[in-house]
Length: 341
Ligand code: EPU
Image: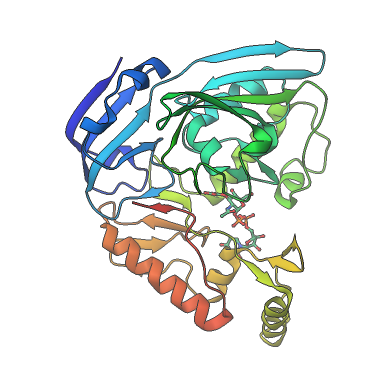
């Protein structure tokens, strides 16, 4: 069934808690609903949204937001080791992780507690603790708004990269994800290489995905704000990839300032990825307040709606300050991870 509202209040529909509105909000429950929807009659532009957990509304939205209410979970193929789960785009992503872990299927446990819906997770290629959702995506079923028909992409054809996919790039706006086919396994296959995970498990080999899930949840609760209590959109910036030369300059600077090692990861092709949180931290920006907005005191990659009624301009002012200060000190231009609308 289609539910349509005009001049819709988005305050409870974005985890940042921005007090903004949209001209039209449409919720649909099936692909059939999308087929019957007259896109041209809706206020433009038309944009799909999930739970608004990775968005910053910079003002009222003059167009239409489409929200998925497709909430089925089906076990498609239960082989000896392999398990395929087809999950509607409107299912809360962590509900899927919870069900998979509870059933003893490996693959989704490191992604536990990531906010948002399944469809949005597949668009953004969400990731955490050494895993990306693209690692377990076998296929993505979409509604093509141009050809007005169903289309299925294999995982390898979704052009997945760090927090990126074809659905965010050249095909933005064309495809609406209706469901995702996940490939999980019963075979004991914990992914505990990420430093914090091994530590949270006390160096023991986890027997079940549920054990890893619990460790991930403990870490996330320590480091990241609870979206029900403090408005934020998780990591605000992407971790930048810099040239080896730039990395050497930053490493030398850190050595001069007290001998600290710069955390970094090999990004291939002679490039190095540095945690944006570390760069922001070393600029002394952790905890700084800009009117209603602040850099979260437990993790500097997160901008929070500190006062509870921060405006989009407060967040944007803090974003600009962080970008400028990190650039001035390290010569690195941070890119937002959060989508600005
Ligand atoms: N660090 C600091 N100061 C801080 C926090 C971290 O210096 O306040 C440094 C530490 O050296 C730490 C390193 O940054 O070792 C990395 O921190 P963390 O492990 O928390 O990961 P991250 O790179 O900051 C990324 C994702 C998170 C994800 C974590 C864990 C991005 C943009 N963010 O953060 O994803 O949970 O890894 O895997 O890639 C999100 O996308 O919303 C998100 C929360």
